[in-house]
Image (cartoon, rainbow, N blue to C red; front, side):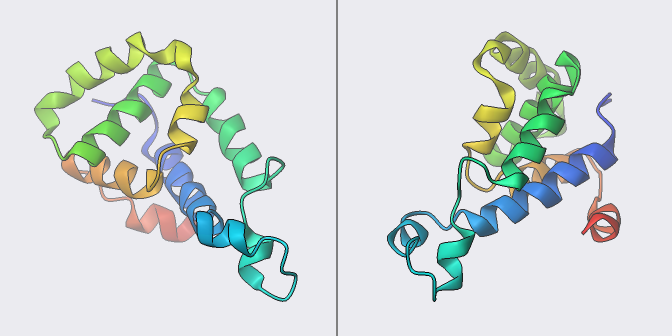
Length: 133
């Protein structure tokens, strides 16, 4: 059973996908200075409002919620099963000193992995996500 609200995870999924769209990797970095190319405008920046908002939301979670969020990410990324969740939460708690927001936002496909983790646990966030987006 999760203590982090599913609606909170859904919000993070939506915002993480917004960030993923902006973070086009090296292709975006190559065209960052090109004002005529819309991808240059979308390139990731230190002052990116989506990153700032996501960081704030994640850092405001309780330690338990942060551990569950990381565990959901790992569950979705590695395609484990629901029985793995308690061990993943325990491992995430041991590693919290490393900065949860920085860790998660530095991981590609954060939104997809969180959604997959929730699906493994039997949750469907599509309706909530459509209300948020």
